[in-house]
Image (cartoon, rainbow, N blue to C red; front, top):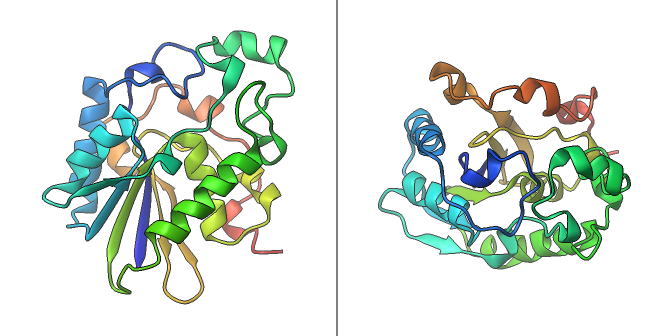
Length: 222
């Protein structure tokens, strides 16, 4: 099985400079263009498509799926950030310095939100429920969110929990590909060439998207 794990396209919650998790917003025109570019670039008829229930993910999945039915899994929704929901990023470091979902994701507990263990349990449950009966030669797409994607990829690869802190953010519609036959093998990590070709990358992403100088793909399983 070849598994494509994609972050949703740009949504209206991505352009306001605030931390957004559960707010349910649709894709922007740019987000739709990003998704169409990803669909054209990958150029696959997916056998299975799974999505978070949030509009930005479901809309992305619908475009990517073509004639394939999109199956919704609540466990793929974004991590609940509690009191940080809707807060400008400029205020978060001052008010909640320990709520670092970047370099500190493996030990995080969002105030009145979810902990890393909560989202890890959701990802494991999704894998157990959704992946168990899929044929070996299938192409599968999972559309979810930035934090959820990091935890899901780390879990699929059976990495230690602290490795997730070295897994950089991905741009909208960037995708990771894992070969799930026998031992899971990472093929592509946060791939975004389709965004470069159409000048669709998030402005300034290179200044904040990188969390670690270590190469996650080369870190191994130790």
